[in-house]
Length: 193
Image (cartoon, rainbow, N blue to C red; front, side, top):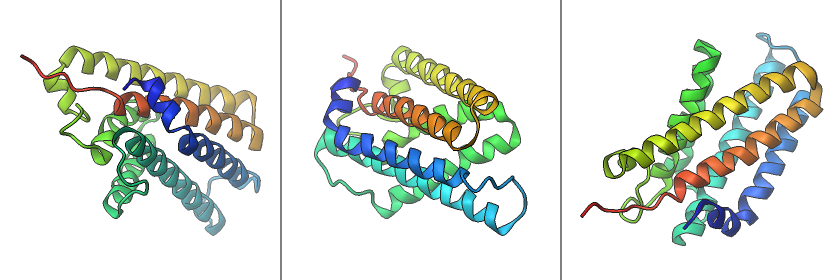
């Protein structure tokens, strides 16, 4: 199944999730709390993390459901895996902001393997063993899109601020992120002869 077919089959899941996450993230910016060691800021940051984790897990489960017809809701292990991936990507930003780009690429590679059925597709790092060129090209595309998102977030931060900037940023992140994750989910396995 192609990326676009998968996006079309799962649109009832990923479109509302992206829109709802955009609204939640924009509302979390409305109090105009500056980053500090305050209770309010920590609670807003945790609410933002919860929104991202829920969005990623629900979109991935929706893609899995559209692809293999399995259950719709993520299991506890899948929720935990998405939480750990999200925290790892967030922690990479604390080390150096550019580390978010490769961290997002690794998370995109790993996410379908967490939610997938490895017998039917080449999800995760197994793709590199089965089709190295395809894996490398798909990784380069993921890194390029993540870099573009990173740059777009910087530009929105400079030129469009407040809840409007947050809404535009998260809407673009959600749409492009859904395409990236769908691309990794839709990668078909071609066994070597």
